[in-house]
Length: 380
Image (cartoon, rainbow, N blue to C red; front, top):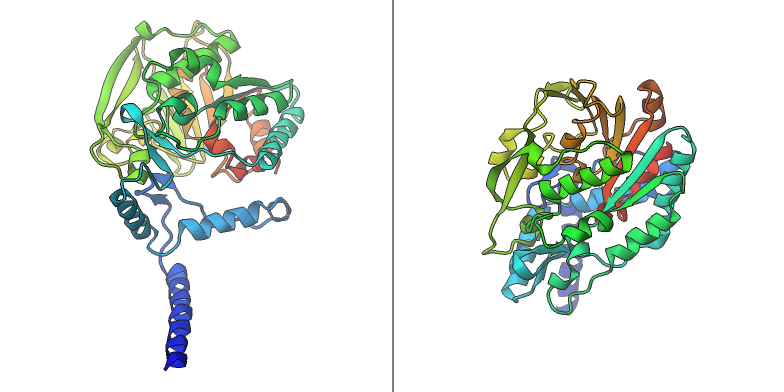
């Protein structure tokens, strides 16, 4: 009798594995997770460089994890179970003080970080005539560790940023987000329910970059500041599934002396006559109001007069923290090329050569950078 029970148990276990494998292969693969409010890992691309650098193995692991059958259902069940136990952490999200949610940030793998730094340094040294700036912004947990729940484990993003800055090639300008955000920590520079900085936080980044470039930046009084949404519940809320939270406001800074900007999206071969897509304000992913969300390659062209013109072209290599910063930059550069290296698989060297790029801005947040192997694609 016991042997029969053991056989049934083994058969049930093996059958379950085969069943999940079957569903994994036949179910359609989603590009975006509404529950986690992020783009999922795409099918990994096998090359010798990816194989030798272990990037292919990492992308394969992420692909299987992101597309595990009924993933959203399992995450919801996990979330409900953990909240029933009155936990202040769920799916990697802490419920902190003052209505803030935070993404867990533990000590990263410094070996990987050094590989990413080496990739950036090699790219910069290969282009000695190109003016390059690397801006690294902390996420909210980096600036507000005092708002975490009691005894919640967390690692200092300040240490990470300082380490990266110290090891960047000195011919490249490194901008530590703590330097220009820290003095404004008491102001609304981060969304409480999302991983991005607010438009005001983006404005502070713009001012810091403009000062570094010696541009004549616009003051806040030069903008008409409008609230376009007061119902934004962002990615942290979606992942944590905490209840009773107040939504965030989304603001847009419209220059009083406005100029028109055309946004070409290479992914879809479409051109928008605005940098803002209002349709997203009626969706869950309201942050995609800025630039219409994540795209591998975009080009923004603005008709500037000579008094506004600071330089002719700029290439921005970025994550989504750049989305609400770029509209400010269009006031100074008439042609801005935007590459999201997580999704762009072409040669950046060739792109820069083809488009005569002489200025590059890297813009990433700390949490994304330390866990994003796609930065290794810089030198492909």
